[in-house]
Image (tube, rainbow, N blue to C red):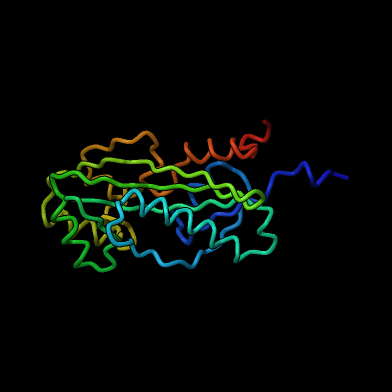
Length: 205
């Protein structure tokens, strides 16, 4: 019989995002998905980085209470906040708001804060990080905005630019230390956190 004590801990992705789920699947490790239920409203006077990090930790902690045997899991929480002209910008939700976002951002730069938390429910320890991605938008036309939105309908993406899809055609440059951060789950940072927690991503220590 195998020794269960030597088995890696259960891995939980605390997210409803299909994009984060697809990213985590790249690591080819087993995981379960739990949707956390938290208030994502920024606090008064809170910086974008602080909002993203706080929410990533809150999502991970909230997921623990929604699963059986949560005390023996490593839980991944992530949140992304986009900023433009010093203000946070969210998911447009509607076609009209997406048009307005893309019109305002053309020829300009936007910062995306992609925060990550790995919460170890065995110890209560939480590792966290904020990965900043700077995106510069092209000077696209209004007809190009309409064509993009009809093709991609990115109304659930912060800033309306779905970089993993056709939204890449709207971008002039991306600057980041982790190419997966913009999509929503910084895998370079995550694999480092998993290693720190003793989880063998490659199957061996």
